[in-house]
Image (cartoon, rainbow, N blue to C red; front, side):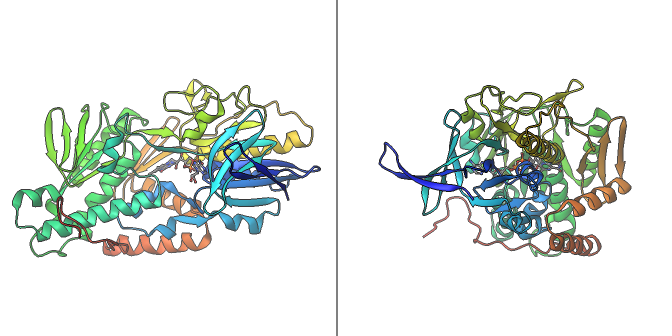
Amino acid sequence: MSAMLDETRPDGVTAVVEAPHRERKCVVVIGGGFAGIAAARALRHADVDVVLIDRRNHHIFQPLLYQVATAVLSPAEIAAPIRQLEVKQQNLSVLLAEVTGVNVASRTIEASSPVVGARKIAYDYLVVATGMRPSYFGHDEFAQYAPGLKNLNDAETIRAKILGAFELAETTEDESERARQMTFVLVGAGPTGVELAASLAQMVKVTLRGNFRRIDPARSSIILLDAGKRVLPTFAESVSRKVAKRLERLGVKVVTDVKVETVDEQGVIVGGDRIPSATVLWTAGVAASPLSQMLGTKTDRAGRALVDPFLKVVDAPGVFVVGDAASSVKQNEHPVPGVAQAAIQEGRYVGRLIAKELKGRKVKRPFRYFDKGNMAVVGKNYAVLERGWLQTGGFLTWLVWAFVHILSLPQLQNRLRVQRQWLWSYFTGQRSSRLIPEPPRMPGADTR
Ligand SMILES: Cc1cc2nc3c(=O)[nH]c(=O)nc-3n(C[C@H](O)[C@H](O)[C@H](O)COP(=O)(O)OP(=O)(O)OC[C@H]3O[C@@H](n4cnc5c(N)ncnc54)[C@H](O)[C@@H]3O)c2cc1C
């Protein structure tokens, strides 16, 4: 595929510049999430070299991350190696590297890989699909005490924190420390906060029942905080109300309209009051990956790149931004939501657009989002769905949710494994992924 040239940079580092073959153009896709993979796949029949770059070797099915964090599933069941796409797509190469810079004037990106170091890669078309990362609203110091949920490491960290808290509660002689270990605070009542809180509530009541001699996990406190007026603010108000009631019934205390002022080793301070908690989880804001800002174009408040209705970056020829990294395109006055379906549709659209342009055809139809509905699951047997005028919730919706998620998982073996785990967990209440890799530690404990 692409030719490589050596080049010495002003800082003395030898970089490798990959230039496209003379007769074949090169599309570089940054990000192997929903949007990036959809873009790369849409180019599979095009006469072009496609280079898909990700800093991880795997694609994650993020909608089920909360189940890894609450021990229902193991990491491998919701992820798949990106490299396996090469088997199915001859014109695709996958590169494990972190993209650290974009130069739209010279049409090159800079990528850094372990051992190889920095290299430049030339592109004819660039698709930026780098997604979002947790945002602590200017309080990055909260991150060390309150992990966000974005990747498999985060999910495993959260799982270890939750399971470790029960072990420490069982061990300590100090009543107030025991209460602190058994208090779980989730900051942010969007879909991730709601799903995580409900799953945790189920876990303490059912999965951990009878597992301890000195504590009763069912007496844990699970507190879901939000600065907004209601849970699930992107859903209709009636849906929010139903979900809040459901959460309360599961034993989750929902507190809205409050601002978290401090997060530290002892817990959180909210509205001047301290809530002692050993496990604070950040399920609130998100910000775009810094790459969107490197394109030299305007960004919105969350750092997402502004794009035109064709998802192109204005003043950056051949550059597109798709998925969560793009500032919402408006459709019928509503912004396209930052969800997996939108990312897939945007990626596919751009892939097809580039394929057409390569054939010398002009694309006149701007991107249109087809809304398949918005869902959230609230513990066992209950999910809500909103699609246009349709708002529904209950057991049947939950079955639909389960069916859709099984079908959407990457790899057939994951679908079969998740299906088996869910059935096991549904009928026994047990969760099979309950290992804590590192011993849990009390605050201030000697780690030598
Ligand atoms: C916990 C959680 C639960 C969710 N639940 C749902 C749900 O139930 N339903 C739903 O529809 N949506 C859900 N979403 C949202 C959905 O997952 C996102 O909208 C979707 O993943 C966006 O896809 P994307 O391709 O834009 O970004 P991502 O899927 O985030 O992929 C971005 C990729 O870019 C890579 N990357 C980033 N920066 C660089 C760099 N500099 N160099 C190289 N690679 C880089 C990352 O490693 C990653 O693989 C959830 C999100 C989260 C975090």
